[in-house]
Length: 308
Image 1 (tube, rainbow, N blue to C red):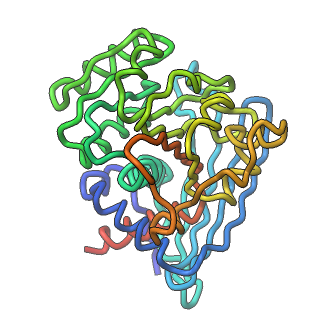
Image 2 (cartoon, one colour):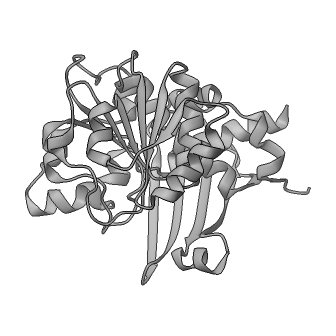
């Protein structure tokens, strides 16, 4: 029997943000995932190999290379694939394009966090970063906050302008040059950079904001400072895939500037409603760390839609 390969172009326009966030919600109502993460490094290059098994859903194994230097050579920075296995017999069901799974998992992860934690009346979304993930975030956030306008900040302002030009026909959106001023204007701040030094300062945060952190995925990467972590109520998609692996939390925990016990909840608790925003004035901060269990939930959603 031929194992299907499900490509990006074949499925991207058949998926919805509501569909993927529903799949993530439903996946977190099942028994907790068994997760293994493997990382190998060569200078700035990273090999990620992640696997998850959820009883009642199945198995996914995702491997990818992240080579930042490829960008200057005109080549994609990331290459990879996801193998999906059935739960009962362990049979390989499909291989899915890495970029398809990652697009919908990554922005869907942040969107579900915002649906649960951000104020429902949020009107201004600030996107920090201007890459592919940033564009996906605009699409995702506009699906749940249809009246929201967008601001885009990037270190290279020309790239923010370029992103705005691509999105201006569909959204109320503008590029901004001063990050501090933009944060003062935003209800939701979604940060998708590859920074190794904090960009967002705790003193800039405003009551009632929701902060969504996506970009950091290595032990040496972080997007907010210690003051931001200590001013906000901190949530994660998964303690297992963030606390010990990602600099956003790993660095301040090891230095003693942040206590892991101050993490208020992860998706299992957020979906079960045993953790939540407690007032309109508090600042919520959500760390999107990814994880193979989220890739599995997303992949099964893709496979289900493909089968239709």
